[in-house]
Image (cartoon, rainbow, N blue to C red; front, side, top):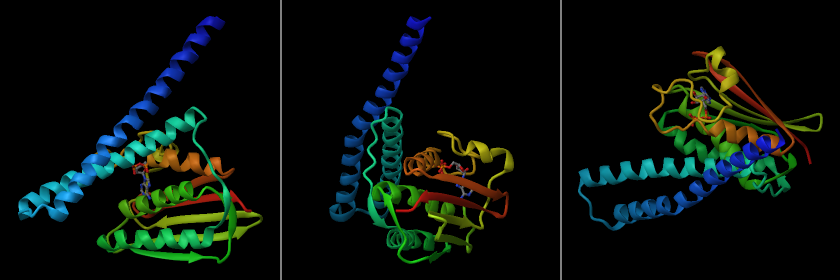
Length: 235
Ligand code: ADP
């Protein structure tokens, strides 16, 4: 029995290693595709049609790059190899900056990003992981948001915890799907997305919050909007 368990454990480990290696190997070709697209768009002297094609390739390659980096993080996390480099960060400033950057993308969808951030909140956090976590929550809120709607980003301090909220008044999530949205590759409705989404984002978000000793929850009403709430310990 012990031998069987060992064998199983060994094959699980091999599978995790395979996902990690595969994601790692895929990074280089996708980077090359992206830099070639950039070169063509800047220097290629392209016709209107050609430009459209290259832009389409660039969009797909960006999605692939995002998916690969999410896979890499999750497979490293499974193996206990994902590094979390915490330092004392001003989360108020960082959150404001992330919200402002996302505002530019939201504008295309006529969505307003409203930030209400209590100043000078500090926590021990990994800067790049915090950025990835919040970027993901806000871009989901924009993506599943309502044209002409809003996305609120709130940050406050409550009983030695930093509380962050990302709220939208968009499509919302059906009650029966709520427990499943954290699963890898789970998407509520594969037809309603434009194939740009892999369903890995929230698994990554949850892992990042937990790696900071925190928790994340969601409240949502279909057709009315969603509210993601994360809490991490203060500095
Ligand atoms: P995806 O890459 O598909 O966005 P996520 O893991 O980030 O993957 O999200 C999983 C699913 O949860 C999404 O496919 C979507 O159906 C749902 N979802 C996530 N955020 C929101 C939101 N703010 N509003 C409505 N649905 C959401």
